[in-house]
Length: 340
Image (tube, rainbow, N blue to C red; front, side, top):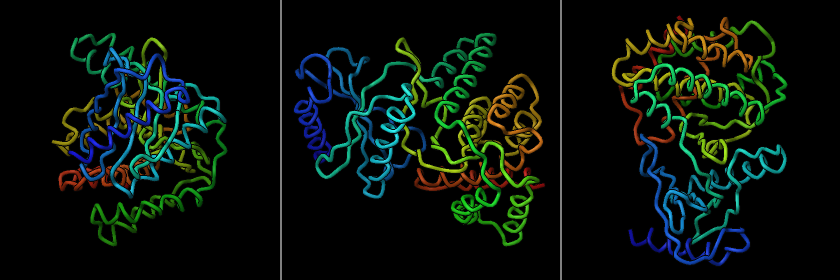
């Protein structure tokens, strides 16, 4: 705790010393901070800290600072800073927070950005659900998917689809990790590879060399009086698998709709088949329209979702202390559905 307190003091001193350079508002006096709560499931060792800095009103921070004490994750902080700069200066995207700098403080790289005000799409959905207003919930659900579509278009398009071979070469980079985490037999690994190789076309719709947001979810999109903002580009990277972002967003909403996602594997698989693969009910149909807007067609859903689940397994393992046996069972059941 003393080490963290000393780090925060050095960070505060850096903000004060660079107040004018960062074009921060008002005077550099009476500034305080609060630490934002870490996302559920994040291991302490792999934690990324986020401090929000404010003056009089803790609900109106002027800056956010992000860092990790895990040296193996220092490059992610620097990478997020580079991609934020690229999005604003090259792609002219104004819906990501303005990056102010990425100094090294006490030997730790720190991403400093202008704070943005707003409520996440996820929290707004929770509030509408609690209010039991099904009509407004349904309308807002549709608005969220439309906004996600708009964000992806501005960040990734125009996409130039790449070959199946190029896609599968990148999939190989996480296939072997997923294979180990899910403890497949050689026979199951061969069957999954056979299905991956079965895509009927030489090029892959929805693919293309693009910036992959990596954790594109309703919790990372804020909306407020100053507009809508995409935050936390921690997992962003260049990738040919552009379609993963739209699948990640859909899967996040799927888990929100299915409250027993982690508790009942049989029910989860049935729900996934009905609402995702078959597109039943209004939410399933909206998922289908959203994915179609990103060139992912229903007749090829199993193939795309198989790749996504492999990616999701590796992503969850990368941020957790332990990949739980219940999760291993659930993801194997979902994959069995897709290759069956």
